[in-house]
Image (cartoon, rainbow, N blue to C red; front, side):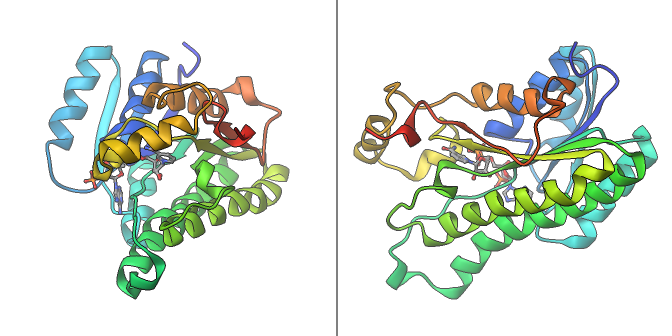
Length: 249
Ligand code: NDP
């Protein structure tokens, strides 16, 4: 029960890596807030998870592109749970398009969710955690935060930004007792990859020396480590969980 008595917020917690992280945190005894877009059966799902893990799980609608919603997410969580010990800044979308065909709106949408959203959530988290004198923020970056990839201009720009934003936040937060790290997943088998056809997927699998896509729970395990006290001397890191992708071929 590594996360016992800890309150955790997971943005984009209704799907893929976020949902796996919610489940691992519940298994380890945390109270968890799923923060995701309105719609679907968020409340009912949170109730089902709470029952399944015999724990405490809430759903709060939050679009990370809206400062007012992000700030309310933290205010409401503190009002209900009293504190926030860990945040997984995980909400994100993909985007594949040749750069010369990429319109402003599509480019800016990816930046606003994947980079500016991380900033908004981290800022709100810092305001709470600095007051507490402790906490752990984990930002979801990517192997595409350190590698380029054709036709992903907005996504790679955003993820590269997340990696370096993490370092700056870590420096600012360290004297206040707050740790800030990033995780860099390789390609992970989630709905985010549904847009890719079989040939594209196989091409990506071949870039991972372990010869497969990652599983959402393998990223959740990295989040759990960085969020927990086991990582008490880790800050400013970009932990690559990528089946060897970034070691080269
Ligand atoms: P999913 O699409 O499965 O999950 C992303 C979640 O974020 C969804 O629930 C989605 O909601 C939500 N979301 C989207 N936009 C917003 C928003 N504006 N505000 C709040 N929530 C939002 O993708 P993954 O689990 O794969 O992705 C999670 C993170 O991991 C992302 O940051 C992604 O970039 C990163 N990542 C993923 C990799 C992969 O191969 N899968 C590789 C490297 C990094 P909805 O479904 O309603 O749109």
